Length: 386
Image (cartoon, rainbow, N blue to C red):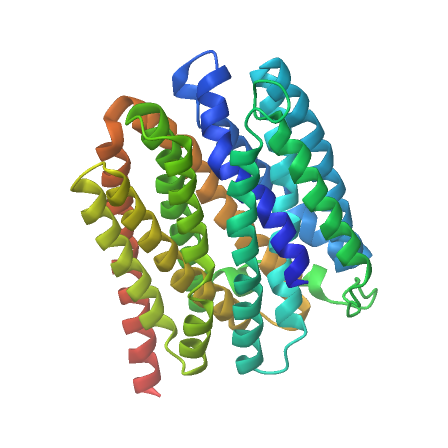
């Protein structure tokens, strides 16, 4: 399952590098440069609930296969759109690729379903995120090597990406899944959403995942455009920064997994948010390659701590019969924040420059840190009262 997720995320990381650059080159207005990235994230948000529901009925394996096939159609459209410089077709391609992201994200829940205790959950999540180190290298490498491979565009990147996804589909064939299909006697459809939406751990997990992804997406989406299109750094330098960022998202997983086993959940989230504050401090201080490199490296590390912890915390907020609803709601919230952030990145960048992006990241980080502290203190007081 980790290998399948790595193949899927390789396509996402390729789009992280190229979507804004291609958008800046073919969009009718430069301010629309990050629209493809936004549309890709919208695809993930739109598919978050349907993906969970589909897997509930037909199983995880068949659902993942459906997502991969949808993404392959998106890569085919992206190939043609890049060759013909058709911006609107490129948006459709980005949307279809984004739909698969919702299916691939369900892979982490598959891993947790196979775990029998919290230690196995932490180990499984570490393995899944470590596998995505492959995606961290392959995705941007595909994007860079695809330039000019077919014609004078990035069409070659979409062709190479299709090969990677087909490999993921082949690997999926050998996966033996648990029975997660809908039980006709299940009471999950009768359970109101409020039973877990109001749970403090769900608010903490989903909110942290949303802010963690939102701030990361905001800064990450703006970086390739700011580096390459505005500050004039080369595509190779930009690729290196993005690769470092994505590797930093997954490389610390063994350490964060070990810390999760010790129960450092709230502290890990607050540490991740503190790292986000350091990111904005470095990014505010300059726009050299090294300023971008250190900012994006730490951005990946902060995201890892926040996302690993929020994912591990989520199952504690719902019962077994509610898992598909809770997982769908969680991913919908996260993808929605990611969509807003990705869309806002281009507008902020072209209207308020790089500093405008950083100010929003800073405000969001501080605000959520205060919320996390408030929820944690409230839970401690409740436990003490007992």
